[in-house]
Length: 126
Image (cartoon, rainbow, N blue to C red):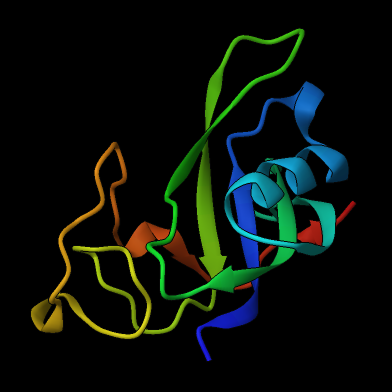
């Protein structure tokens, strides 16, 4: 089974774009079908972010960031965090093994993998 439902958090979304629909469009374009989404507030910082429930294909590398665009706002980068991410390779970006066991080449582009991509469930729905 390489596909499973998973929650992705989108951080760094501009206030004008921080909506359920924006999150759904961003994630659907790169991950898979969207099951649900919502806007949340971080209890510690007050920052707003979007959570999207989607189906992820774990045979492919995860994304660490997305380039977002809006009619009113210039392009900006959105960071992705995955809730309760299981074993994850910081070299190739795939789930299911650690870097020391990796047999894959890293993906091309600006992907940067690391522990910051995994998070515990945070925030309250607004």
